[in-house]
Length: 316
Ligand code: BDR
Ligand code: CA
Image (cartoon, rainbow, N blue to C red; front, side, top):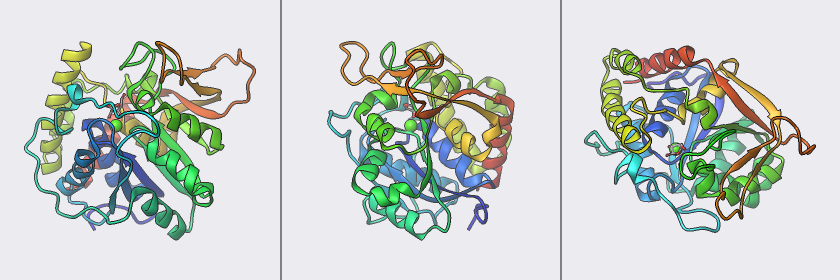
């Protein structure tokens, strides 16, 4: 075992790697506050075949071979899958040459692996979701007993402000808004870590130097990922310091005091002619509905990058 996973918070990461998902996996695998028990994959940034391989590539590069990775839903609950090759490349991890994963996919479907991990855990398990919420919605719908033993779902997605795939919708929310609606209606504790916060986690030149200075194989692979990711973010959004969204959700679990959040009302648009997937966050309470989610408002950015550097340094 190469990671420090003896006494941390038990966590499952559900992801769609994706450049920033890789850093989420590394932050979790290398952070002493987290005990990464399983990884599940979903179709999102790229089709499931790629996300399931990429999750194993990310862990293999980092020398983590003892965390099971299982494939989940190939596409959303009731829509066709929309992908994001224009940001992540054709295989989802544009930039470096991808090595063969050092371990195979788990034979169980994602939700079966989640159920087993939750049942085997002495404590309640936290799920960090960094893609569309399809797998989590299926778990909640089909395995309510297991869902009751989830401590919290901490999800990178949505926004209190504008979107990144339509003017008002963030990608993960937009790909499967029905999944978000189902998770919200389940009563499970949900924290949304949206673009309003992740757009402060910018991969500046100073950040890239700092991470490259870690000097490991994982850091070098990461630098190749960031080169590609910053280039596509510049081309698409005019953001040469690309926002590294997904690991901010991990930070909210590992170091909750670094991510300030408020308890508020969160809903998602399912039927708007221009606004499907937009998250409606009633920060001022004007709707007078019961709060149903925690929503991140700010990030201690320096602390985030310091923790990222330390986590990567603990990996191979
Ligand atoms: C989210 O969409 C994906 O492209 C990223 O991996 C992240 O999860 C940001 O909108
Ligand atoms: Ca993602």
